[in-house]
Image 1 (cartoon, rainbow, N blue to C red):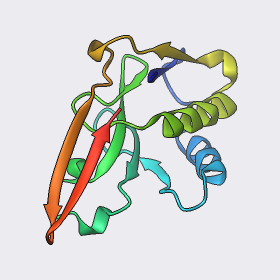
Image 2: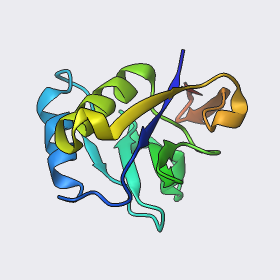
Image 3: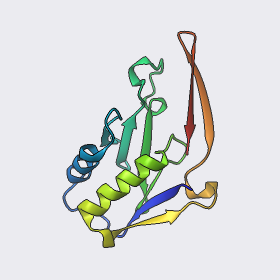
Image 4: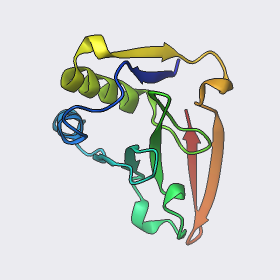
Length: 133
């Protein structure tokens, strides 16, 4: 089951870098790195494996992302992280902020900000299927 990552603090005391470093140092080999999401809300992003091949000028169509909303990291109407990515990000936040400052909120329905959707795109005659968790 998917979950939402929540924090009990308003600001990241040391910024994003320690969280991103911990995530990237511990991610499985061959997976995309975690980066800062450069949006007004802030948050995190991971590029799709085929980021450079996707024929879209809109970056939101090429990344998994979680944005801050009321001290929660949610995907909203965008592609969210899968369970493995969420677990690793949760561990990075707990390591960087302290386990007492981070918690999981189980997703019971689509109102939790993690929706199910399948997106199919055709690039150079190949079908690329993506699902959001």
